[in-house]
Length: 365
Image (cartoon, rainbow, N blue to C red; front, side, top):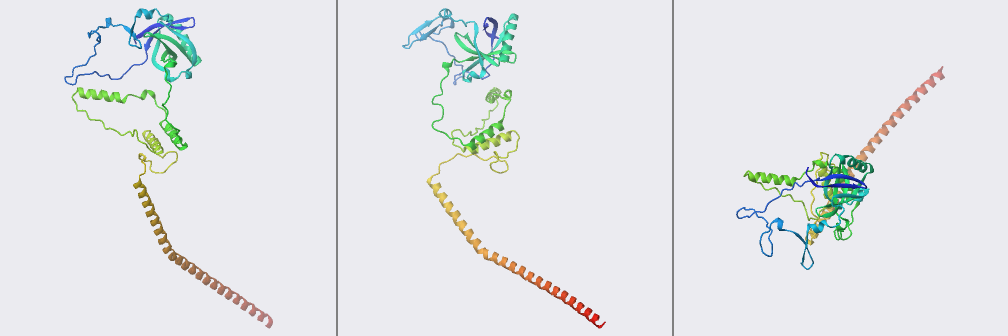
């Protein structure tokens, strides 16, 4: 990789010669402006507004525009004479825990490469010290004509530097939060937690730019003369007021389905076959719908009254059937009792006759 800056890391009295290399690259597809009438490319030319003549790069300098419009020329020599100790040095000023750096301050990222064999030992020393301390180094450096703030940390076996915005360059989030007091119910938080758990983690290396791939396919199709089919526009529901609970349940089901899990509802709420419910916007009830609701309620009451009346008519029949059954059971019980009594009487009579005959035999003897 080509270095964009050569200098040294100042680590106390230790100086580490390094090269600065870009750690990121931009894969965005860039377009040119053309003249629609003939397809000719539109170019920008640098023209002096006084004589309206095009000016070459060597004839262009820099100036500061004052509040009244006055141009104050500033030369490279003027800037070179300024006391800038970090002109060729990344000066470490402190070591702090990483969580003390606000992510809002993060800017461009660079790799720091040891410049030459003598730099290998102090470079490795700083790298291992950062690893063992679990801290990052805050440093000041100069790049492209201005002093900047940076953060040094270890990535694999390399020291990386993140350019940081100065604290006064971070804007306060005034007027950004929603207006008024918004209450979130526990049920909504529970569903949000369930959705977070279902989505789980992701391998960052698996993420890619779908839009850029679509643009590349579009360019390839047009270059080969193929007909480009318009993409189907999906309704994302932006700007609609929706049922939040239903949307969360729908999201949980979709996440589970995409991961091959069974759609068993959201945390025990509701029953069904696992299909996702449609999410519809919440609409205000008009007067007509209110009247329709009243009419429906009256109809429901009438149906309920008719059902009760029908049930009351059928009740006597059911009672009669129960009485008949009860009577039959009682008659059967009486018959059984009489039969048992006859058997008992017959049995006792036979026994008495036998005893009398035996007494008579004894008396004659």
